Length: 356
Image 1 (spheres, rainbow, N blue to C red):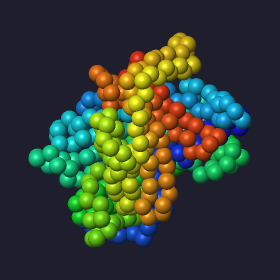
Image 2: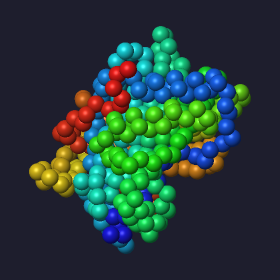
Image 3: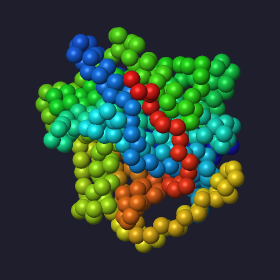
Image 4: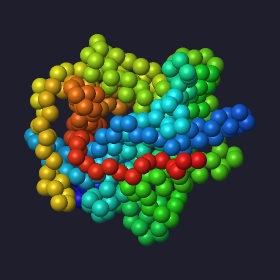
């Protein structure tokens, strides 16, 4: 039981929060009408119908280090990475990630997950000119196993489920963000992202007095890039596959804060054998990959100094060139989460809101 609940605490705090949301405490509000309109416009970008061009599905494993060896559990959840473009505007690139527990597979039907969608808008010349990020997570305040147990019990007894969303926008002259926590009588799970996205965007859009964090002036110009976390990571992944010298760092602005993402190191991996025990008709996922690049990545909040790091094994050939074969996050020496590519997984429903 302890391992299972520890996995959930990690899942929320590490995957959903550090790598997807990163929602910080609110700053004093800026109620400029143009800022409100810009946030509304960013929400509209997120809601555009998207044509998926690349899609990777994953199976999640959690492990604990017990003295000299690792022990863990496979197939407790999963997720996907999707890359595409807006159906009506080829200049809008979309990157989306979703990871979390699957109540149908996780112990105690645990439901904790998060997702993030970034829209990177380009000019006619192909240069990035603005971005919007929408983050969503099944909110959790539990910082210990006992706190998590109480939180789960309370949710089940009163039918009140907590969620949190953020919209972050970056333009040439400013960075903006707004967040909203809310409760719902529907406990959206990892298979219901379209409904969860719609409900969260409605919460963000329906609050006329929403607080907006703003970054402008010299603070904004300190990092001239338009991309946020997901497009920045995608660029570093491309650099890793291309064999760029390391360390390779890129600044970005997210939630009106300065961050730096670094490809710390890369190394060739001649062969990687993956075996994951599955629940359901298929007994196991077994795959052997060759000629990979292993990349170690680090993300730093330039204002607070907080750091998180992760490792990605990347394909270098054919259809798997640039594909994240395996994603590993190890927040401390005794705990680890691994996401393994599931090449034969079925396609999920089309993400996002219906076309406007």
